[in-house]
Image 1 (spheres, rainbow, N blue to C red):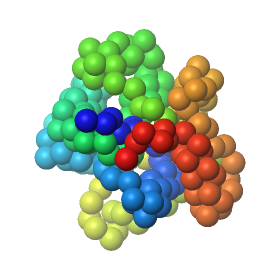
Image 2: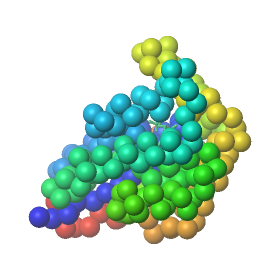
Image 3: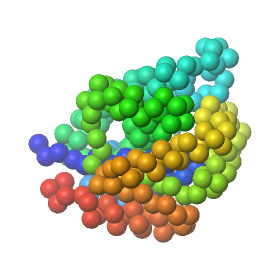
Image 4: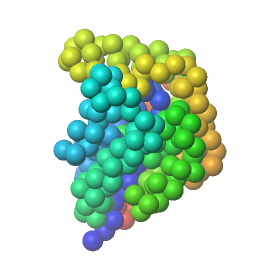
Length: 224
Ligand code: TMP
C-alpha cells in the first residue's frame, strides 16, 4: 500500500496552529486527499485521559505536584498510543496525517520549559516512538508577546464557556515561555529540511495561504 504523508503543527499556546490545521485539512480534503487529524496529548481514549490529567490546573489538588519527568513520560505514553492506534494505520492507508503538536512540543516544553534537556527527549523519542519523524513540520512563531497574550485570553474563555480547565501550562511565567520559544528556534535551525517556520504576525488568511504553498510544494505526487 502507498504511504501517506505526515505533517505536524507546532508553536506556543495561542500561536494559531489549531485554526491553521483545520483550514489545511479542509483544503486538502477538497482536493480529494484522505486526511486524518489529531492532537497531542489526546486523540485516543487513553490519550484523552492523559490530556485531562496533564492540562487541568486542578489535577495537582488531588494528585500532588506532577514531577517534570512524570509529565514527560505521560506525554510520550500518549504519543506511543496515538502512533500505534492512529498515525501509522493512517499513513499505511495513504492518508495525510495532520497532528497538532508532536515530539518538538516535548523538546520545547519539557526539554526547555521544564529544563529536562533536549537529549533526554530525543532519546525517549527513539525508544518510545521508534524515532518516527514527521515529513514536514509547520512551526508557527508569531512574536512571543502576541502568543502569550492570545494563550491567556483563550484559556480564560475556555474555562468560562465549558467549565473545562486546561490551564496547567498557561499559568507558567514568561521565562518558561521564553525558553520554549528559543527551543523552537533551535529546532528550526537544526532541522531546516523538516521544519518550515512561519515567523511573522500576518493575518490568519495570509498564513493559511503561505501554508498551502509550502504544503503543495512538498507533498509528493505519489500520495493519493
Ligand atoms: P494545546 O492543545 O493548546 O496545544 O495544548 C497542549 C498543551 O500541552 C500545551 O500547553 C503544550 C503542552 N504539551 C507539552 O508540554 N508537551 C508535549 O509533548 C505536548 C504534545 C504538549
